[in-house]
Length: 385
Ligand SMILES: Nc1ncnc2c1ncn2[C@@H]1O[C@H](COP(=O)(O)OP(=O)(O)OP(=O)(O)O)[C@@H](O)[C@H]1O
Ligand SMILES: [Mg+2]
Image (cartoon, rainbow, N blue to C red):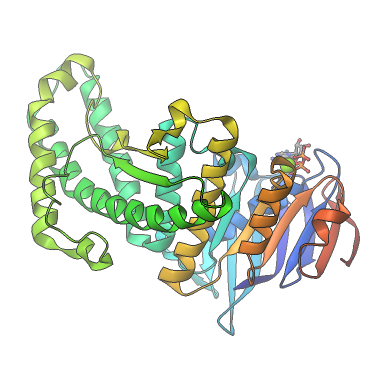
Protein backbone atom coordinates (compact mmCIF):
# COMPACT_ATOMS: atom_id res chain seq x y z
CA UNK A 1 0.00 0.00 0.00
CA UNK A 2 1.10 3.60 -0.29
CA UNK A 3 0.14 7.13 0.72
CA UNK A 4 -0.55 9.37 -2.25
CA UNK A 5 -0.65 12.70 -0.46
CA UNK A 6 -1.06 14.34 2.89
CA UNK A 7 -2.65 17.64 3.88
CA UNK A 8 -1.57 19.28 7.13
CA UNK A 9 -3.24 22.26 8.75
CA UNK A 10 -1.88 23.68 12.02
CA UNK A 11 -0.03 20.44 12.62
CA UNK A 12 3.12 21.03 14.73
CA UNK A 13 5.24 23.54 12.78
CA UNK A 14 3.16 23.16 9.59
CA UNK A 15 0.66 25.93 8.91
CA UNK A 16 -0.99 24.72 5.75
CA UNK A 17 0.58 22.31 3.33
CA UNK A 18 -0.28 19.60 0.85
CA UNK A 19 2.43 17.15 -0.15
CA UNK A 20 2.27 14.57 -2.94
CA UNK A 21 4.35 11.48 -2.38
CA UNK A 22 6.17 9.04 -4.59
CA UNK A 23 4.94 5.46 -4.35
CA UNK A 24 8.45 4.11 -3.78
CA UNK A 25 10.86 6.27 -1.82
CA UNK A 26 10.36 9.70 -0.29
CA UNK A 27 13.45 11.32 1.16
CA UNK A 28 12.55 14.05 3.64
CA UNK A 29 15.57 16.31 3.66
CA UNK A 30 16.21 19.27 5.95
CA UNK A 31 18.30 20.74 8.73
CA UNK A 32 17.66 19.96 12.38
CA UNK A 33 14.35 21.18 13.80
CA UNK A 34 12.70 21.93 10.43
CA UNK A 35 9.81 19.44 10.66
CA UNK A 36 11.06 16.16 9.18
CA UNK A 37 10.03 13.99 12.14
CA UNK A 38 6.77 15.97 12.43
CA UNK A 39 5.91 14.97 8.88
CA UNK A 40 6.64 11.30 9.59
CA UNK A 41 4.61 11.60 12.77
CA UNK A 42 1.62 12.90 10.82
CA UNK A 43 1.77 9.87 8.52
CA UNK A 44 1.96 7.60 11.55
CA UNK A 45 -1.05 9.45 12.96
CA UNK A 46 -3.14 8.42 9.94
CA UNK A 47 -2.44 4.78 10.77
CA UNK A 48 -2.72 4.68 14.56
CA UNK A 49 -4.80 7.76 15.42
CA UNK A 50 -2.12 9.03 17.79
CA UNK A 51 1.53 10.05 17.82
CA UNK A 52 4.32 7.54 18.30
CA UNK A 53 5.71 9.94 20.90
CA UNK A 54 3.96 9.66 24.23
CA UNK A 55 2.33 13.07 24.26
CA UNK A 56 -1.21 14.39 24.36
CA UNK A 57 -3.15 14.89 21.11
CA UNK A 58 -3.48 18.58 21.92
CA UNK A 59 0.27 19.07 21.87
CA UNK A 60 0.23 18.29 18.14
CA UNK A 61 -1.70 21.51 17.48
CA UNK A 62 0.50 24.31 16.14
CA UNK A 63 1.42 26.69 18.99
CA UNK A 64 -1.22 29.41 19.30
CA UNK A 65 -3.84 27.64 17.17
CA UNK A 66 -7.06 25.95 18.27
CA UNK A 67 -7.17 22.82 16.16
CA UNK A 68 -5.24 20.74 13.69
CA UNK A 69 -6.32 18.72 10.69
CA UNK A 70 -4.49 15.91 8.92
CA UNK A 71 -5.91 14.38 5.77
CA UNK A 72 -4.36 11.56 3.81
CA UNK A 73 -5.18 9.91 0.51
CA UNK A 74 -3.88 6.40 0.14
CA UNK A 75 -4.05 3.40 -2.09
CA UNK A 76 -4.43 -0.12 -0.85
CA UNK A 77 -4.76 -3.10 -3.16
CA UNK A 78 -5.89 -0.89 -6.05
CA UNK A 79 -8.55 0.81 -3.91
CA UNK A 80 -8.29 4.46 -2.91
CA UNK A 81 -8.97 5.50 0.66
CA UNK A 82 -9.24 8.71 2.62
CA UNK A 83 -8.51 9.52 6.27
CA UNK A 84 -9.46 12.81 7.87
CA UNK A 85 -8.39 13.61 11.44
CA UNK A 86 -9.48 16.72 13.29
CA UNK A 87 -8.42 17.51 16.86
CA UNK A 88 -9.31 20.66 18.75
CA UNK A 89 -7.83 22.41 21.75
CA UNK A 90 -11.13 21.80 23.58
CA UNK A 91 -10.63 18.03 23.26
CA UNK A 92 -12.80 17.24 20.26
CA UNK A 93 -11.40 14.39 18.23
CA UNK A 94 -13.16 13.52 14.98
CA UNK A 95 -11.87 10.90 12.59
CA UNK A 96 -13.46 10.16 9.25
CA UNK A 97 -12.62 7.23 7.03
CA UNK A 98 -13.89 7.68 3.51
CA UNK A 99 -16.07 10.53 4.79
CA UNK A 100 -17.71 8.40 7.49
CA UNK A 101 -17.16 9.25 11.18
CA UNK A 102 -15.75 6.46 13.32
CA UNK A 103 -16.70 6.03 16.96
CA UNK A 104 -13.75 3.99 18.24
CA UNK A 105 -10.06 4.50 17.52
CA UNK A 106 -9.67 0.77 16.88
CA UNK A 107 -11.79 1.18 13.74
CA UNK A 108 -9.07 3.12 12.01
CA UNK A 109 -6.31 0.57 12.56
CA UNK A 110 -7.03 -1.57 9.55
CA UNK A 111 -6.68 1.18 6.95
CA UNK A 112 -3.22 2.70 6.69
CA UNK A 113 -0.59 0.27 7.96
CA UNK A 114 2.80 1.72 8.94
CA UNK A 115 5.94 0.48 10.59
CA UNK A 116 8.00 3.21 12.23
CA UNK A 117 11.69 2.85 12.73
CA UNK A 118 13.46 5.49 14.80
CA UNK A 119 16.76 5.56 16.69
CA UNK A 120 14.82 4.63 19.84
CA UNK A 121 13.64 1.46 18.09
CA UNK A 122 17.25 0.38 17.84
CA UNK A 123 17.19 0.39 21.64
CA UNK A 124 14.17 -1.93 22.03
CA UNK A 125 16.31 -4.77 23.28
CA UNK A 126 18.25 -2.79 25.85
CA UNK A 127 15.69 -0.24 27.03
CA UNK A 128 12.93 -0.43 29.65
CA UNK A 129 10.24 -3.14 29.66
CA UNK A 130 7.67 -0.42 28.89
CA UNK A 131 9.26 0.13 25.47
CA UNK A 132 9.10 -3.57 24.70
CA UNK A 133 5.46 -3.65 25.80
CA UNK A 134 4.75 -0.68 23.53
CA UNK A 135 6.40 -2.52 20.66
CA UNK A 136 4.21 -5.57 21.31
CA UNK A 137 1.05 -3.54 21.81
CA UNK A 138 1.52 -1.40 18.71
CA UNK A 139 2.25 -4.35 16.50
CA UNK A 140 -0.46 -6.66 17.81
CA UNK A 141 -2.99 -3.82 17.54
CA UNK A 142 -2.24 -3.52 13.84
CA UNK A 143 -2.69 -7.24 13.41
CA UNK A 144 -5.81 -7.42 15.57
CA UNK A 145 -7.66 -4.13 16.12
CA UNK A 146 -9.71 -5.79 18.91
CA UNK A 147 -6.45 -6.04 20.88
CA UNK A 148 -6.20 -2.25 20.80
CA UNK A 149 -9.65 -1.98 22.40
CA UNK A 150 -8.66 -4.54 25.03
CA UNK A 151 -5.48 -2.62 25.90
CA UNK A 152 -7.47 0.60 26.07
CA UNK A 153 -10.09 -0.92 28.38
CA UNK A 154 -7.44 -2.65 30.49
CA UNK A 155 -5.63 0.65 31.13
CA UNK A 156 -8.86 2.36 32.06
CA UNK A 157 -9.80 -0.33 34.57
CA UNK A 158 -6.28 -0.48 36.06
CA UNK A 159 -6.41 3.30 36.54
CA UNK A 160 -9.78 3.02 38.25
CA UNK A 161 -8.52 0.20 40.44
CA UNK A 162 -5.41 2.20 41.38
CA UNK A 163 -7.53 5.24 42.31
CA UNK A 164 -9.70 3.01 44.46
CA UNK A 165 -6.62 1.56 46.18
CA UNK A 166 -5.56 5.08 47.14
CA UNK A 167 -8.86 5.89 48.85
CA UNK A 168 -9.15 6.01 52.63
CA UNK A 169 -11.98 3.50 52.96
CA UNK A 170 -11.41 0.92 50.29
CA UNK A 171 -14.46 -0.77 48.84
CA UNK A 172 -13.38 -4.43 48.80
CA UNK A 173 -16.25 -5.66 46.65
CA UNK A 174 -15.36 -3.13 44.01
CA UNK A 175 -11.76 -4.40 43.90
CA UNK A 176 -13.13 -7.90 43.27
CA UNK A 177 -15.26 -6.55 40.45
CA UNK A 178 -12.26 -4.81 38.87
CA UNK A 179 -10.09 -7.91 39.28
CA UNK A 180 -12.64 -10.05 37.56
CA UNK A 181 -12.91 -7.58 34.65
CA UNK A 182 -9.12 -7.37 34.40
CA UNK A 183 -8.81 -11.17 34.34
CA UNK A 184 -11.24 -11.48 31.46
CA UNK A 185 -9.42 -8.86 29.35
CA UNK A 186 -5.90 -10.00 30.32
CA UNK A 187 -6.62 -13.52 29.15
CA UNK A 188 -7.29 -12.17 25.64
CA UNK A 189 -4.27 -9.83 25.80
CA UNK A 190 -1.88 -12.52 27.01
CA UNK A 191 -2.89 -15.15 24.52
CA UNK A 192 -2.31 -12.71 21.68
CA UNK A 193 1.08 -11.82 23.12
CA UNK A 194 1.97 -15.52 23.26
CA UNK A 195 1.04 -15.90 19.58
CA UNK A 196 2.85 -12.73 18.59
CA UNK A 197 6.10 -13.64 20.34
CA UNK A 198 5.98 -17.13 18.83
CA UNK A 199 5.68 -15.64 15.34
CA UNK A 200 8.17 -12.82 15.78
CA UNK A 201 10.61 -15.30 17.31
CA UNK A 202 10.57 -17.52 14.24
CA UNK A 203 10.82 -14.69 11.72
CA UNK A 204 13.42 -12.59 13.52
CA UNK A 205 15.44 -15.72 14.22
CA UNK A 206 16.01 -16.36 10.54
CA UNK A 207 16.56 -12.67 9.76
CA UNK A 208 19.14 -12.36 12.51
CA UNK A 209 20.84 -15.50 11.35
CA UNK A 210 21.17 -13.95 7.90
CA UNK A 211 22.44 -10.58 9.12
CA UNK A 212 25.15 -12.25 11.17
CA UNK A 213 26.08 -14.74 8.43
CA UNK A 214 24.90 -17.63 10.55
CA UNK A 215 27.04 -16.68 13.54
CA UNK A 216 24.23 -15.77 15.90
CA UNK A 217 21.08 -17.59 16.94
CA UNK A 218 18.38 -15.21 18.13
CA UNK A 219 15.67 -16.35 20.48
CA UNK A 220 12.77 -14.34 21.89
CA UNK A 221 10.93 -15.43 25.01
CA UNK A 222 7.71 -14.03 26.42
CA UNK A 223 7.96 -13.20 30.13
CA UNK A 224 4.45 -12.72 31.46
CA UNK A 225 4.07 -11.43 35.00
CA UNK A 226 1.61 -14.27 35.62
CA UNK A 227 2.93 -17.65 34.46
CA UNK A 228 0.75 -19.58 32.02
CA UNK A 229 3.35 -21.97 30.56
CA UNK A 230 1.73 -25.04 32.10
CA UNK A 231 -1.67 -24.14 30.59
CA UNK A 232 -0.14 -23.95 27.12
CA UNK A 233 1.98 -27.06 27.51
CA UNK A 234 0.11 -29.28 25.03
CA UNK A 235 -1.17 -26.48 22.80
CA UNK A 236 0.27 -25.86 19.34
CA UNK A 237 0.92 -22.13 19.69
CA UNK A 238 2.38 -21.91 16.19
CA UNK A 239 -1.19 -22.28 14.89
CA UNK A 240 -2.51 -18.75 14.81
CA UNK A 241 -6.10 -19.82 15.56
CA UNK A 242 -5.13 -21.23 18.95
CA UNK A 243 -5.74 -17.68 20.22
CA UNK A 244 -9.46 -18.22 19.62
CA UNK A 245 -9.53 -21.35 21.78
CA UNK A 246 -12.12 -20.74 24.48
CA UNK A 247 -11.01 -23.50 26.86
CA UNK A 248 -7.53 -22.01 27.04
CA UNK A 249 -8.90 -18.49 27.47
CA UNK A 250 -11.03 -19.64 30.40
CA UNK A 251 -8.09 -21.43 32.04
CA UNK A 252 -5.88 -18.35 31.67
CA UNK A 253 -8.62 -16.09 33.00
CA UNK A 254 -9.11 -18.31 36.06
CA UNK A 255 -5.36 -18.36 36.67
CA UNK A 256 -5.15 -14.56 36.53
CA UNK A 257 -8.18 -14.11 38.73
CA UNK A 258 -6.65 -16.39 41.36
CA UNK A 259 -3.33 -14.52 41.35
CA UNK A 260 -5.10 -11.15 41.59
CA UNK A 261 -7.26 -12.46 44.44
CA UNK A 262 -4.23 -13.87 46.29
CA UNK A 263 -2.53 -10.49 45.90
CA UNK A 264 -5.45 -8.35 46.97
CA UNK A 265 -4.02 -7.68 50.44
CA UNK A 266 -0.66 -6.81 48.96
CA UNK A 267 -2.32 -4.42 46.48
CA UNK A 268 -4.13 -2.73 49.37
CA UNK A 269 -0.92 -2.55 51.41
CA UNK A 270 1.03 -1.03 48.51
CA UNK A 271 -1.92 0.98 47.25
CA UNK A 272 -1.29 -0.09 43.66
CA UNK A 273 -1.86 -3.01 41.29
CA UNK A 274 1.13 -5.23 41.94
CA UNK A 275 0.38 -8.07 39.50
CA UNK A 276 -0.93 -8.39 35.98
CA UNK A 277 -0.08 -8.09 32.29
CA UNK A 278 0.81 -4.40 32.69
CA UNK A 279 4.12 -5.87 33.93
CA UNK A 280 4.77 -8.30 31.07
CA UNK A 281 8.05 -8.23 29.17
CA UNK A 282 10.00 -10.32 26.71
CA UNK A 283 13.65 -11.35 26.62
CA UNK A 284 15.99 -11.57 23.69
CA UNK A 285 18.75 -14.16 23.68
CA UNK A 286 21.73 -14.39 21.35
CA UNK A 287 23.38 -17.80 21.34
CA UNK A 288 21.56 -18.51 24.60
CA UNK A 289 22.78 -15.39 26.40
CA UNK A 290 20.41 -12.63 27.55
CA UNK A 291 21.20 -9.75 25.18
CA UNK A 292 19.76 -6.98 27.35
CA UNK A 293 22.05 -7.92 30.23
CA UNK A 294 25.15 -9.26 28.53
CA UNK A 295 25.01 -8.32 24.83
CA UNK A 296 27.36 -5.79 23.27
CA UNK A 297 25.82 -2.54 22.00
CA UNK A 298 26.21 -3.77 18.43
CA UNK A 299 24.44 -7.03 19.25
CA UNK A 300 21.61 -5.17 20.96
CA UNK A 301 21.13 -2.92 17.94
CA UNK A 302 21.31 -5.76 15.44
CA UNK A 303 18.80 -7.76 17.47
CA UNK A 304 16.50 -4.72 17.52
CA UNK A 305 16.89 -4.39 13.75
CA UNK A 306 15.97 -8.06 13.35
CA UNK A 307 12.86 -7.49 15.47
CA UNK A 308 11.75 -4.52 13.40
CA UNK A 309 12.33 -6.32 10.11
CA UNK A 310 10.36 -9.27 11.48
CA UNK A 311 7.54 -6.84 12.25
CA UNK A 312 7.36 -5.91 8.55
CA UNK A 313 7.37 -9.55 7.47
CA UNK A 314 4.69 -10.50 9.96
CA UNK A 315 2.37 -7.76 8.69
CA UNK A 316 3.00 -8.84 5.10
CA UNK A 317 2.19 -12.42 6.00
CA UNK A 318 -0.80 -11.94 8.28
CA UNK A 319 -2.49 -9.04 6.50
CA UNK A 320 -1.22 -9.73 2.99
CA UNK A 321 -0.32 -6.09 2.68
CA UNK A 322 2.99 -4.26 2.30
CA UNK A 323 3.12 -1.74 5.15
CA UNK A 324 4.48 1.78 4.75
CA UNK A 325 7.91 2.15 6.28
CA UNK A 326 8.84 5.29 8.21
CA UNK A 327 12.58 5.55 8.76
CA UNK A 328 13.41 8.43 11.06
CA UNK A 329 17.16 9.10 11.16
CA UNK A 330 18.02 5.41 11.23
CA UNK A 331 20.39 5.07 8.29
CA UNK A 332 23.04 7.13 10.06
CA UNK A 333 22.72 4.85 13.08
CA UNK A 334 23.57 1.69 11.15
CA UNK A 335 26.90 0.57 9.75
CA UNK A 336 27.36 -0.16 6.05
CA UNK A 337 26.53 -3.85 6.25
CA UNK A 338 23.38 -3.36 8.29
CA UNK A 339 22.26 -0.51 6.04
CA UNK A 340 22.59 -2.84 3.06
CA UNK A 341 20.67 -5.54 4.84
CA UNK A 342 17.88 -3.13 5.70
CA UNK A 343 17.63 -1.75 2.17
CA UNK A 344 17.69 -5.20 0.61
CA UNK A 345 14.98 -6.52 2.89
CA UNK A 346 12.47 -3.74 2.27
CA UNK A 347 11.67 -4.20 -1.37
CA UNK A 348 8.18 -3.28 -2.60
CA UNK A 349 7.28 -1.04 0.32
CA UNK A 350 6.73 2.70 0.27
CA UNK A 351 9.49 4.33 2.27
CA UNK A 352 9.71 7.68 4.01
CA UNK A 353 13.22 8.46 5.08
CA UNK A 354 14.37 11.55 6.97
CA UNK A 355 17.89 12.83 6.73
CA UNK A 356 19.87 16.04 7.21
CA UNK A 357 22.08 15.39 4.20
CA UNK A 358 21.98 13.30 1.08
CA UNK A 359 24.56 10.58 1.23
CA UNK A 360 24.96 9.44 -2.38
CA UNK A 361 26.22 6.04 -1.34
CA UNK A 362 23.12 5.41 0.79
CA UNK A 363 20.71 6.89 -1.77
CA UNK A 364 22.02 4.80 -4.64
CA UNK A 365 20.85 1.71 -2.85
CA UNK A 366 17.23 2.78 -2.78
CA UNK A 367 14.88 2.56 -5.74
CA UNK A 368 14.00 5.79 -7.52
CA UNK A 369 11.77 8.26 -5.76
CA UNK A 370 11.43 11.80 -4.64
CA UNK A 371 13.38 14.22 -2.46
CA UNK A 372 11.34 16.69 -0.44
CA UNK A 373 13.38 19.51 1.01
CA UNK A 374 11.73 20.93 4.15
CA UNK A 375 12.56 24.22 5.82
CA UNK A 376 10.67 25.63 8.76
CA UNK A 377 7.47 23.70 8.04
CA UNK A 378 7.44 24.50 4.34
CA UNK A 379 8.58 22.76 1.19
CA UNK A 380 11.61 24.52 -0.24
CA UNK A 381 12.08 22.20 -3.16
CA UNK A 382 10.83 18.88 -4.56
CA UNK A 383 12.69 16.80 -7.09
CA UNK A 384 13.20 13.29 -8.40
CA UNK A 385 15.92 11.31 -6.68
N1 LIG B 1 2.92 22.01 18.55
C1 LIG B 1 3.88 22.65 17.86
N2 LIG B 1 3.64 23.84 17.25
C2 LIG B 1 4.60 24.47 16.57
N3 LIG B 1 5.84 24.01 16.42
C3 LIG B 1 6.14 22.82 16.99
C4 LIG B 1 5.18 22.09 17.74
N4 LIG B 1 5.77 20.96 18.19
C5 LIG B 1 7.03 20.99 17.75
N5 LIG B 1 7.27 22.11 17.03
C6 LIG B 1 8.51 22.52 16.40
O1 LIG B 1 8.89 21.58 15.43
C7 LIG B 1 10.30 21.55 15.34
C8 LIG B 1 10.84 20.14 15.41
O2 LIG B 1 10.44 19.48 14.30
P1 LIG B 1 11.01 18.02 14.02
O3 LIG B 1 11.18 17.25 15.26
O4 LIG B 1 10.13 17.47 12.98
O5 LIG B 1 12.44 18.40 13.44
P2 LIG B 1 13.38 17.54 12.54
O6 LIG B 1 13.44 18.17 11.20
O7 LIG B 1 13.01 16.12 12.61
O8 LIG B 1 14.78 17.80 13.26
P3 LIG B 1 15.99 16.79 13.62
O9 LIG B 1 16.83 16.72 12.38
O10 LIG B 1 16.69 17.51 14.71
O11 LIG B 1 15.41 15.50 14.04
C9 LIG B 1 10.87 22.30 16.50
O12 LIG B 1 11.42 23.49 16.03
C10 LIG B 1 9.66 22.56 17.37
O13 LIG B 1 9.72 23.80 18.01
MG1 LIG C 1 13.82 14.49 13.58
